[in-house]
Image 1 (tube, helix red, strand yellow):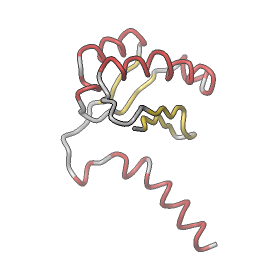
Image 2 (cartoon, rainbow, N blue to C red; image 1 turned 30 degrees about the vertical axis):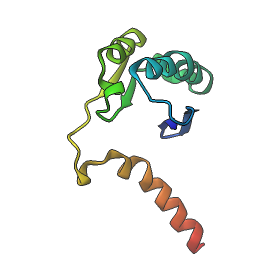
Image 3 (spheres, helix red, strand yellow; image 1 turned 45 degrees about the vertical axis):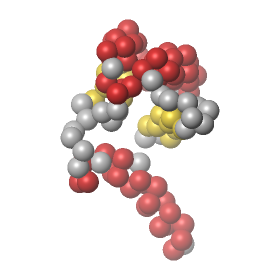
Length: 109
């Protein structure tokens, strides 16, 4: 399973879990503390002095009390995710939109 952390300048971190391994709050918090924070420090050092805002879906590992406490310790914030709806998927606008635009330009150039 792939867990990816992206921002407007590109990917910050991609982590993989073994097949059949469940993502729990403990494993997600481990990724935040032991992998994402050092990746932010090395790739986007200037962002650490600013507010870090994560966009999660409403999956249990993202909304668990342990995860919320970890985010509080890191002084990071998670955006509220709207109820699921086909017209409300943020990834359609922030991830797939630029990807689609780049693909269309490549095909027709």
